[in-house]
Length: 508
Image (cartoon, rainbow, N blue to C red; front, side):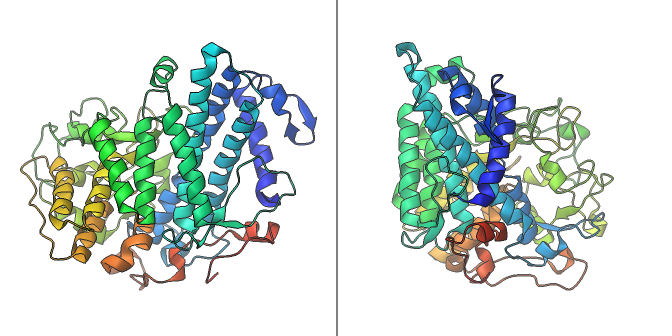
């Protein structure tokens, strides 16, 4: 690939191997490990997949960037300047979040490529073949996820196969390798091949025996959910609908309901403390967020108490997710208005801490309330069934406004703890897309979707960033033209400096 990433990846690879494989201390060159000394069996591949590939996936940079740059947050009472430049739309090639997204996913891609190259030198026994194939399948699905995510931020136009995409790396790069950006068409063909291989070779029996049958690992359902997301991003609604329907019909999952409720006064500004209890709360939707039940989760990043991985709620607050926990950011006021426009909506309580101070317009973000003795740590939900329903709504909006409305209603019904939602009535495709974006804004807030949703649908729906004037402590721009170059991330400056073959995105 290029010097900038390669040097860091070799260091990361060294650290990862010392964790996942006990025989990984044989240094054959300065800063480099011998793969032959590490990967000797299918069991070694399995260890590296679990201990290095899966643990490299982290969507925190996307979540934080999206929240601060768009319209999910307002400055909190304890903010003393954290990310205020980004909140005021200052974005350039030195931005740390853009660099973090880029390097993070190329780290994952590099680890998958190392696993695949090592696997090619291992001959599994007949009894190991299914497990061997499954390991490769899971790894290639993870690589596909990485490329879809990179494309969603750095491609100049995801719907144009001839437009610039990201760097295509299908092997372990040498320290001096420098690769140019590929076209979208080349990237998408590569991703499609990875996902097809993954779907064909995932082995349910092996996954069950080896503890992979959970939302923390790749599954056939996850693969088809990724396909639905990818084809939606590309505007291929026929295939997006096909794979989304497969997930809905064959995954065995249903939208997580908002009943039974915790005891208390339903409809008041606060609920009984039982609702916010990690152990006593009976509400299925809240259980998704305090990690006591997976609910409708399709793919989730495990963040165990006392384990590795950052504290996701620390993106928004300092100590705890309540008003005394020194919140750096709070609910954006127009997002809050969208949320509360739906009566009897469980998300009003599941996403906002009851210690919030409405008199000061400070609504504390509590979507990640922590667990056990770690108040800021929660699993990170990458794909949930509600996203698939909203993908179906977007697909149907192209040809059937009534069908699109029914999918939006299904999500809103699931989020009501009392009564049912009205069926939306759309007069045009633009109106339908606008309402779908509104529902995605509420349902998927603080999960890293809003920026990508606006850049791919904002122009067609006539929607852009939508802030309240009180979201900042100074008079600042409340929106950004949907055609602004900042709706595509810059290639990081360090990448440009280390790789003269690469082309920067327009406007940077």
